[in-house]
Image (cartoon, rainbow, N blue to C red; front, side, top):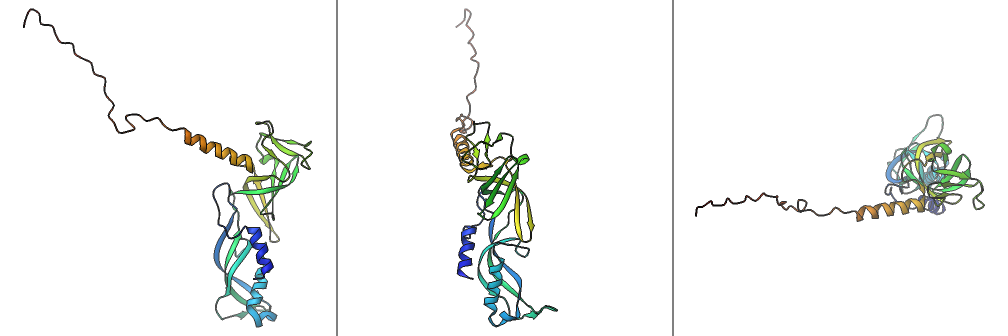
Length: 249
């Protein structure tokens, strides 16, 4: 693989990491695949170079065989020695095995994007600094209101009315959002997102909220009771008063 293309792929994919935990998933998966490529007759003399040239041309574009966008790849090799010429085309049909790092977000996935556009009716983001995502105003929860007068963010910002604007989403902010739909046109991916779900919003605010929630849950411990410790709870018994001897011994 061309070193410059490989380095670009690694930077954009964040390495060969698999999906992380909920709320921090990058939707990049690593898988071993075999795909079919059509080699130009001029590259048959060096088929390995020809297949890598084709693979490099597939980087950062959606591919149906991979089920997503090829971010980077390695361990590529031509499988088998048979190569048939495609009818009416002259191209040679070959199969290549490789380890592919593929960006394949699905509906419901939570992704982290960086805000690059803000408007009165939307928020625009970039995921992995490459893929466009947009969040319409009707997908932003009601606590947020658009502030057009923010001088630090072109187009204004979205502020929470619940905490007096401390939870703020403006240009350059990193935001967790939920994927509502994924579309592809001319091999270019576009994501439609939402900020209506729990665990979405500005990265720092979401992390702080999660930390406080986990700390609060840990501090609320149940008090130990005799029954919880496996001890028998003493029963209250009525004491029978002894009868007085009336004139007897």
